Length: 264
Image 1 (tube, rainbow, N blue to C red):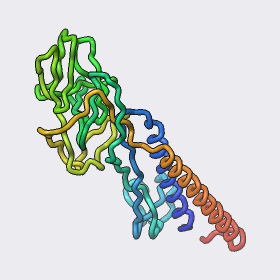
Image 2: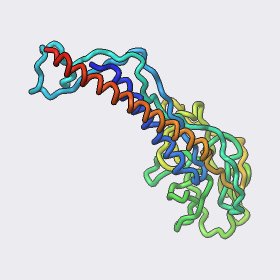
Image 3: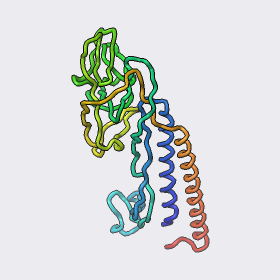
Image 4: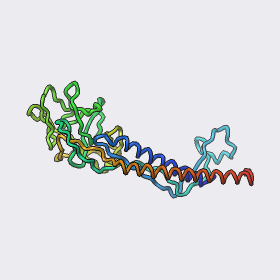
């Protein structure tokens, strides 16, 4: 086993994942309420390596094999792998739109939305509209949730969302927006452009009773273009350096094989 090849290859995989994360952040720089992610890497003191072969190609003693045809070939110390991606919780800047159905969070927390099957998701994007049945929905068609479920506007001509989450239709309060927080929001999982879902690590959503909203405004993405471009360039350079290490290790292995032949 050539440890240098495995170590450099693992570094290439990490940098490739870092480029993907940065690219996704840049792709959503114009998405209201989007929160960028950061790649979190981890170094294993010892990582067990194995080779996978088809059963008919096995030549080593049967005791060396594990279930599934995996052959242990040693361990690799300090191998770097992608641990997870973490959500950046810094708030984005506000943009005033003047649209009465737009509302921006004034503090840490998330609006609650639901799909047609009743599954709940969470978003910082307060860019809402009215669907054909008079319900408040996101522009992706998810139903905004109030304290009584879906928010029904009916035939109301004038709709106002107050800074405390109160929803008024033609001067009459018809409900209050649900606004929740999480104990560890960095562990929330992205399921769409600005939608996130809870995970075991993030904890369950906690309802906030007193919160502040900014009517007629939207929170923009918290992605900084220059910062993401720098991260992408750094990852590309690190990928190229790791690739050169793989090439150097492969050339060394070829010279050793040519000089001394394959071991029996």
